[in-house]
Image (cartoon, rainbow, N blue to C red):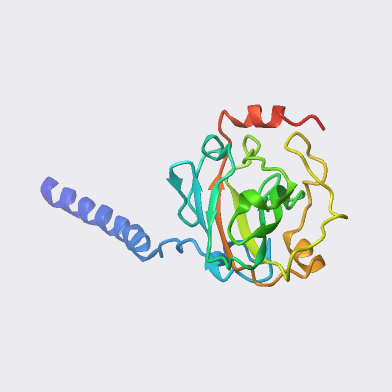
Length: 211
């Protein structure tokens, strides 16, 4: 009798667990990272191709999570560039101060115009590079890098220059507005993004801002 009761209880427990197991099995996996992951938050249309990005010896995978410590310095960029063309390179955070409440969308991290061919070092720096500095407790931020082909060499005289110690002109920047204003070719020829959240380098980064 005791054995029969025990068997019945075990059967009831197994039956109760089966729907949960079935639900877990039926749950679809998260979608893989895509160039659509920052549309329309940053641009209207996804870029044509994936931008190759390397931070030091770290080759970035699309949508990969990095740390602020890993992205202190500007990355090396590679795309299918025409040596006769000029390009604009930009990097922004559409999740400032957080993805849930992006009231400062977008924060501008890097902007270089008149890049000849694929040689970013010879471009005209409009905003010096500032690494990722997501505030503590704000979760993962997307950091979007884009390359636009210009109609030719351009005059950026009216565009303010932003040094690495100043926040001025960085919050509430719009890549889309900039591309429209200067008639950059759209969609961007290449782009990608990575994810990052707070680490113990962030206070050092924030301390460099003097204005």
